[in-house]
Structure formats: C-alpha cells, structure tokens
Image 1 (cartoon, helix red, strand yellow):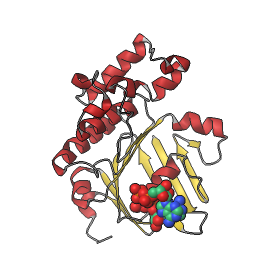
Image 2: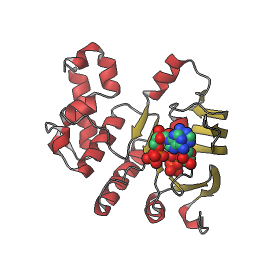
Image 3: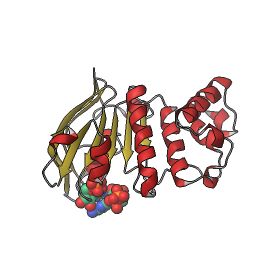
Image 4: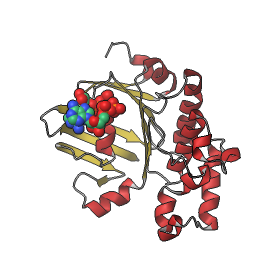
Amino acid sequence: QTSLEVSGVSKIYPNGYEALADVSFNMQQGEFICIIGRSGAGKSTLLRCINGLHPVTRGSIRIQGTEITSLPDEEKLAIRRRIGFIFQEFNLVGRLSVMHNVLSGRLGYMNGFHSVIGYFSQEHRQKALECLGRVHMLHRATYRADNISGGEKQRVAIARALAQEPLLLLADEPVASLDPDLTWGIMEDLRSVAREEHVPTLVNIHDLETAKAFADRIIGIARGRILYDGPPSGLTTEL
Ligand code: ADP
Ligand code: ADP
C-alpha cells in the first residue's frame, strides 16, 4: 500500500523564490527514507509541505490516498494530527513532566479540556507509557522535560509522535543538535519504529555518511530538485 504520494510538487515562496521544483516520489508502509542535500536545498520546505504547514504552489500530496493540498482546514488539521513531527530542537515543554509531554500530543487533543487541568484517562496513560517504553525512556517518565539530556529529549519526542498513532513520521534534522555519539542511537530508534510499527518515516539529514548507514532509500535534493532516488549503495554523485 502506498502511504505517501508526492507528485509534481512545486513551492514558490511569496518572495518569488522557488524552493521546490516538480518534486515526485512515493513511499510505502514502513519505509525509512533519508533526504539529503546541502543547507538551502529545500529539505525543510518539503517536510513542511507534506505536513500541510506550507501550501504548495503546484502538484499533489496524498497521504494514504487522501489528497491533502485541497482539503478544508478542519480535515487538514485532522490529518496533521496523525503526522508525527520530530524537530531538531525537540520542542518539548520544559516545565512539564516527560509523561505529560507525551500525553500532550494527539492524546491531549482527544482529552480536550481535561488535559489542560492535567487529567488523562487510564487508557491514554497506558498508551503513553507504552510509547516511552518503546524508546527506552520509561525510567524518565516523571522527570521534568528540562531535566533530561538532549538525546533523552529526542527519544521523548519520538515517543510523543508515536502516541499520535502516526500515519507518517517526519523528522527535520533530528540529530543535528546532538553530540555525534548520540546520533546512532536516535537513528536506530527512528528506523526500528518505522519498520516495527510500519510507519513510513522521512528524515532530513545533512550528513551523508549517517544517511547511508541507516536509510532503506535515499532521496538527494539540490536547489529544490530531486537528483537521486534509490538505495544508499547507488549514491556516487556529489549533490
Ligand atoms: P533546507 O532545509 O534544505 O536547508 P529550506 O527548505 O529550509 O532548505 O530552504 C530552501 C530555500 O528556500 C532556501 O534558499 C531558503 O532560504 C528558502 N526559504 C525557506 N523558507 C522561506 C520563506 N518563508 N520565504 C522565502 N524563502 C524561503
Ligand atoms: P532551518 O534552516 O533551521 O530550517 P531557516 O533559517 O532556513 O531554518 O528558516 C527559519 C525560518 O525563516 C523558517 O520559517 C523559514 O521558512 C524562514 N525563511 C528561511 N529563509 C527565508 C527567506 N529567504 N525569506 C523568508 N523567510 C525565510
């Protein structure tokens, strides 16, 4: 089953800059793809378009068959709640507990008013603990998010994304703010989540060696165009 279909997508920013030019690719269930390219190549723009954060100028983006570029805002929001997004800077709420951060994603939305006062159902707590366990962070559940290390924060962010029961995971430079020795652990967690939970995962990364070591498939972009799309082993050109 095709999880994501991007076809003929172009993005021209209001200032006239064309950040994506006729980008097309498909993703299958559980695929782990790294997007590589120099700074300014258009990697973030691509993720933001898929996330519905930026409107595309041309082209089509389908998530499990649903065309998202033309959806009314409310339905777009419903889809966006099922897209897990991992940020370079983690984006946790520092004064809240690790557990509360995980609960505050889609589960928080489903709890509505109750999550504002810190009440979560037993079922959702169970789900959050399960997700924390998945990334080996159960022992940090009660810590304040600003009292854990960078690598731990990124694991918690992965758990938060997983709690959304994502149709798709997007990670924008997830290891760029971490010490190099933490990179492998985080990449391994992302890849195992993709494979074992069958969540297609797109990771923006500027380090080619890391991408080659982990990706099932690499998409290389330069100046908004796809220059390579294939297995890591076939990548010989400099982008
Ligand atoms: P990458 O993630 O590969 O570093 P980006 O997608 O962030 O690349 O940016 C691609 C290009 O688009 C860059 O030249 C950047 O300056 C430009 N760009 C990004 N956002 C905007 C914007 N809001 N308006 C105009 N240009 C932008
Ligand atoms: P990053 O490289 O970490 O993705 P950027 O510095 O490219 O971040 O962009 C930071 C913010 O500024 C983003 O919201 C982006 O859309 C915007 N931006 C980037 N380049 C431009 C630009 N040339 N004109 C206007 N906005 C831009």
